Length: 497
Ligand code: PFF
Image (cartoon, rainbow, N blue to C red; front, top):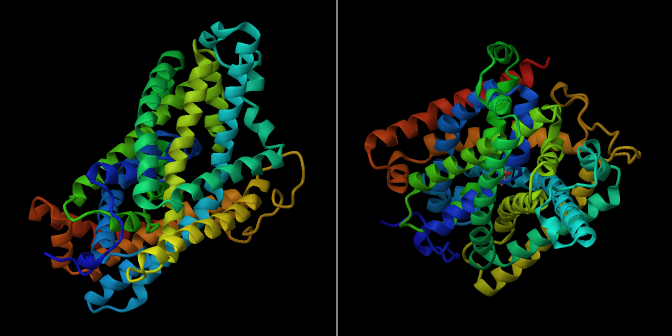
């Protein structure tokens, strides 16, 4: 069995199934799970959102994930090239490459604010290292066993992010360092860069996350945390039906968290070898990603409630709440360092994926000779990374408090009801997660369900029963496009008017 072009595809592959899964999970698990999920859940009131979210993962995320991996592997080449080739082999027009271009725009835009938030994480890594080092300097090595931030009051601790937001220069430096590390890894390519990063970083991440969640459940208000996340509020259900916003938030978060609708999984699917089973890989990625989001919720909300913090505090939730937990924990200093490093690692394996989508497109197509291609990858990573850094500076300045920076008072899309009052960073976040990614997913599902022939899809996906294949195809043809399309039109256009 030969793919359309897979046989002639000289690109580097993952070294195996485990490597692919780690890299794909690495891309999926990130600030979306640790920072964005708690934030969206907090703002929309918890249980009802979480329920919709799980439904979206199962009936929309999973089928679209299979579709993206299928398109990537079968098409071969960057997201744009893969779609072009697949359309051609089905005798369809090249118009569908728009899915690849749209994905490129989305991932690039996400990178411009993702790296700013990751810069905040880096700041907290340094902050907690500095705190522990200070404590050891004062009280000797025994200080290791004491809680974090001992010298600070609770109010001081939960205003650390607020502090950072008054220091634009520091924020930009942290953002810059993070982008440079991302560029350095993507430059090295699939096996030498992306894969090594995922193999080292992801296992450490999982161990730390579990340790932390256990300690949060013990030290925080576990009951309130569970109730918030898992007890659907039926009033919210009603409200959601009238303005559709929870539905759109849930869809947007599902796409963002699984890195879907952005051609990213098409890009990684390219490097998947023919022996790997796509449905199994997709299931593993979706399961890991969803578990991490829920577990992160259980690591954060018990502390938020125990400390009386505001659960709808936006992106700052993680940064304000967890340091308080470490403040009450023996060996808290060590935990704080470990946690923020883990978050940084998770962010890094995602930002790599974000940059890779555009670099793969800029990289040229399969017939360029390998030496040239390596050079183009290096140049592409640097140039694209630096442009993202530049736009990211504006994003960072839009978050500054206390000083006027132009960007923190600039509301570029204020005339659109959906985006009213949002500064640049929040605007790009909403625009990508709630509009562009669902739109990309909508088009991807239609492409996979209607444009790609049943026989090609069946062969590529190789489900273990014809029935599962039929269900997948039905979801791609009807359920995803109709559900996502209706929610988009209703929540984004009709309801805000
Ligand atoms: N899935 C990542 C997260 O949850 O943090 C974010 C992301 C990475 C979105 C890569 C899109 C993407 F292509």
